[in-house]
Figure 1 (cartoon, rainbow, N blue to C red):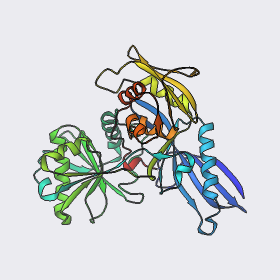
Figure 2 (figure 1 turned 135 degrees about the vertical axis):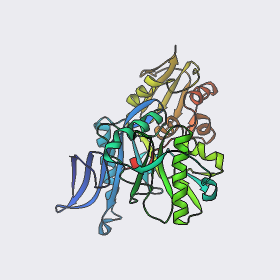
Figure 3 (figure 1 turned 180 degrees about the vertical axis):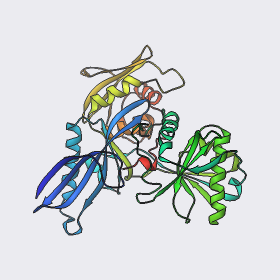
Figure 4 (figure 1 turned 120 degrees about the horizontal axis):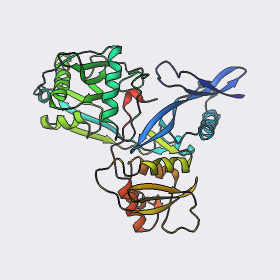
Amino acid sequence: MDLHTSRVPDCPPDRVSPGWKIELLDEGASVSRLWVVDRDIRVGASVMRVGGISSVATNDDHRGKGLATQVMETAVALMEKEGYHASLLHGIPDFYHRFGYAPCMPEYLLRIATVDAERAVGPLVLREAKPTDLPAIARLYNGENARRTGTALRDAETWKGFPRSVGWFTRPIVRVAADSRDRVLGYVVYDEGRDRVRACEAGGQGGEVMGSLLRHLAQLAVEFRKEEIQLALPPDHPLALYARKFGCRSELEFPRNHGFMGRILRLEPFLDNLADRLGRDGDFPLPMGEVTLSTELGAAVLGYQGGKGFLDGNAAGREGSVHLGQAALFQMAMGYRSARDLLMAGDLTGPPESVDLLCAWFPLRNATLYWPDRF
């Protein structure tokens, strides 16, 4: 079999980013394949160049031969060579950990009884989104998610819109809340169809906007005879916070070894990017100090002094060494697990003072990659 790697301008039809296609060819026919999607992802205040693993598949008659392993190993090597900081994927259970990936984002679902959501009021009428609304939606999105770990950056000039709702093959409905001058003040994205009322993304600020969005979803639920509204949003999202007034139930899933998973590809560039933005996304000053981080990818000293983060690649002989795997370090940077949690689980070793620093620098967060941006 021949291994073929090519740069492609576009990924499969339901994807929105360019990237790479890696496939194994048997007498010219593709038998196993995946795509590496280019994406800029926020990790705290930093922006990382991430390779998203997408559409991993092997033909039925070629399964059980280790072909997916070959294309995955090739993909990891390619991303390292091409200078990606990290990689993300949405994985099946008990497979992708072999390539250094670990869960890094939970799944969220908020449930609101329709009879309660009907109490929401708002003056804005929602209309169907138009292509000319996309720059305004992108600006709302980027403004609200500038400090939300896991979110993708959207270029207001080139962003193509919403390829999906909740699920890989669920078509979205996009509605915008506009004022009397037709300025877009908010938006909501939800599943097409009448089997449920489930939103995967929303944007805007203020009670009038949030009330108008929730009222619209409540009207749909009444029309479709559904007893509840579902929001696939983190619990600190503006619409989720607004919904607390009306009563709701929040569900979080932390997968053991599947779901959204990630890994670091190049340690020093990853840490250097973190150090450059350390302390810029918090509301309180960070404690000063330095920690030597030692992983299977190498070691480096991460520190914070005088209101700035720094990185020193010369870790030899430095005190306060913390030992952990690169996947655990990625989980910590994403706010999925704290340094203290990792220590308790045996996934990190190090002195208490270093663990305290890492907990302050990398607090737990509601990391989110909204469904329309998934690959």
